[in-house]
Image 1: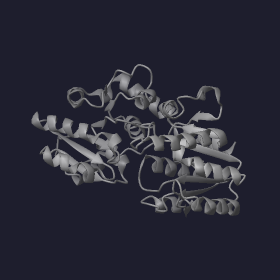
Image 2: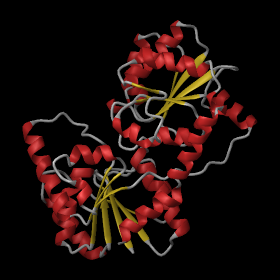
Image 3: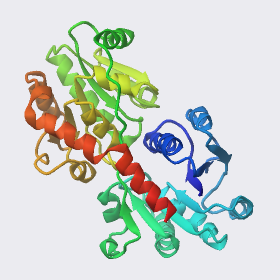
Length: 371
């Protein structure tokens, strides 16, 4: 089948990483399918070369919210390419491409919600516009997907999702990793300026407000004031630009801004703890990847994180996202205990690697794309 994905760009991020991993899995497991990606911003990004290496065809397809002209171009494009399936990963804002796809007689039309809430400040006009888009999605999609129940609860609160088989939860697939040797781990630590014996607290995520860097920097401040031998490492695009000033104002000497990284797998393997007090998430992929690597964590108790954990973990290692003091207390507890070796945590790691297995999750997604 010929499949088209629509996203904003191919800059490194949670969605883009998901798409890249799915593309790799598809190329290795199901060569009978052809995958294209269209970037609605008109720009590609850091992952462009990785997609092209896999043979994925990439298109620049600028689209706005009100100007109809790009959508006439999109219609001509669809008529010439003759796709079997279109999947737009931009939630409600996939409505207009889905409308054009419907008018272009595309058989399978999917919208994927990857965030549990909006990232913009709502106004009356924006809410009315989004309500219209949401109605188009419900009316014209053959499938409506999300990686969290929290997204369905937010975007379709007045609609009985459970009674509509088109609505499907598609969990992110997490790849198995090759373990680094002790020597390579020390090389990674040294390259980051981590001192011998110093504990590493890692966060992976962009500088967006949802990631709650202010809380994490306050935890780092408390740790520094307590003379804890710990280094806080922040990997992600735009983190230093958006939060470096606060770190400077707090006088933090125990923080490393690592920027956008392509070696997150290596970073996870040198991390002693993973910090993830997000204000909002879709499915918390970075947290799940840390869990799959056996890294003890501290995370916020928001709905998307709660639903991503098994029963019994809803009151373990979770904090309110606005409680840095509580976060530090939990971090100190982690530092004083070797939770990696505890049977309950080992069981959690096994559960995570089973439930979020790539073959299972990507296989379900492919089945949904092609039926």
